[in-house]
Amino acid sequence: KNEVEQSPQNLTAQEGEFITINCSYSVGISALHWLQQHPGGGIVSLFMLSSGKKKHGRLIATINIQEKHSSLHITASHPRDSAVYICAALTQGGSEKLVFGKGTKLTVNP
Amino acid sequence: EPEVTQTPSHQVTQMGQEVILRCVPISNHLYFYWYRQILGQKVEFLVSFYNNEISEKSEIFDDQFSVERPDGSNFTLKIRSTKLEDSAMYFCASSGNSGGAGQFFGPGTRLTVL
Picture 1 (cartoon, each protein chain N blue to C red):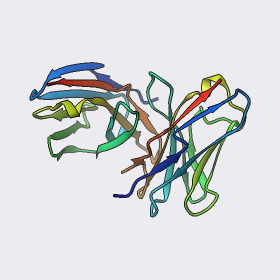
Picture 2: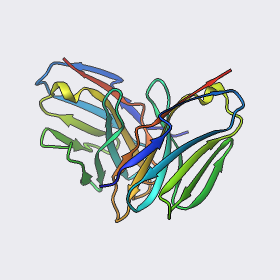
Picture 3: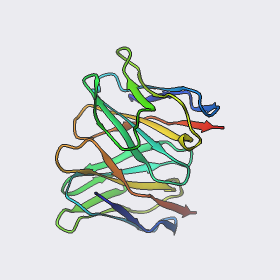
Picture 4: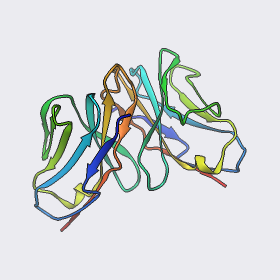
């Protein structure tokens, strides 16, 4: 059974700080998603990655397959980045099932 | 930009009643998903659907649940006899790719069972 763990559970930062959110998983995966959930509940897909690193604007996601670990970084954080960030893993073997972490609640203060 | 839509945004029902949650996926997508999130808990996979049949379902998705694509645009989740513990936010998602890749999520339907 694939378990997905995230840390920290809560994170408070000052505007402009560099943010790192971590995700680890217990079994082999075919891909890992990073998602953003806004206070209203809506979910937006940020990245899907199976190796290496991806960058979109101020967001960077990395994954280390051997260590079963992924990180989401936010550079020059802004109050509008305040949200819950969720990682979700897709297990190897052709599964369609995403296994979600509990999320990291990020608050960026001005 | 294309988006997944869901109706209603909030549904209140009495225990034991049937509810149908509706989703309109992105028009050229072929893979469809339902997830739920009980308040304060993590998002959970319910079911995936492709080519007019369920491709995978979780242990949560028991006989009380069913999914259907009744026409070319809608994708529905039916709960036959709701229980208090079905109260949650239900998210629909669609993708143009297999393997759960590149999913677009709808805004969710908040289901409250009284």
